[in-house]
Length: 117
Image (cartoon, rainbow, N blue to C red; front, side, top):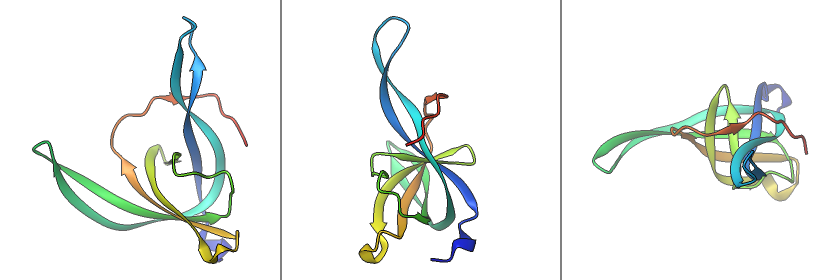
């Protein structure tokens, strides 16, 4: 793994249940872990959904191995959010992860309380 290429800061986020002021349970996006990574766009495409053309861009994120990273998480990078499509443990050596993700174009509610794992 070329550590010099991991020059971007990304944050893994996930939805967590919390209680609001009315003692109701709601889901909010919370930060889990911030790491160094490389972020590279791999391809772009457009698809039609509900009679609207939507652009989609696919990215490959490469980082050191982190066992707590799961496909139900999101990646926050420069104020944008990315949906994780797949996580590849390169050569099954627990040294490097290649994460394929697409940019999330919808607004996400974010919980400002940061939690490190």
